[in-house]
Amino acid sequence: MSGFTLADLAVIVAARAEASPEESYTARLAADPARAAKKFGEEAVEAVIAAVENDPKALIAESADVLYHLMALLAARDVSLDAVMAELERRTAQSGLAEKASRGPAA
Image (cartoon, rainbow, N blue to C red):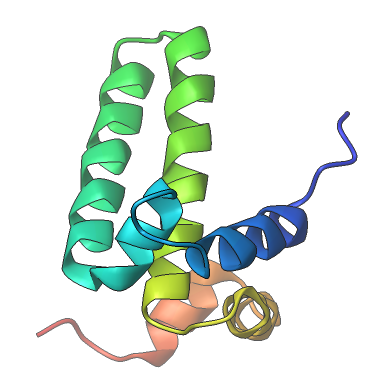
């Protein structure tokens, strides 16, 4: 397994977001949060299609795109990976079914 982590990716994205938009795709996304969100959505749909089509190679590639574009979107909206990880940690304190039940009936 690779030693590369989401934290590593977040650091790279943050550094590239500070570059000139003329020189960096990441900087272009960081400068336009709506564009970053749309690209994230496009990549997520492509990952879903790869999963439905049972194409592991495409799912790996599209998942990498999803993770990159999520990091770019978070950077564009000045949301840290640490904040997202803290939320995940909070949620894992109970099972998903218990968490859903605590919300009450669906509207």
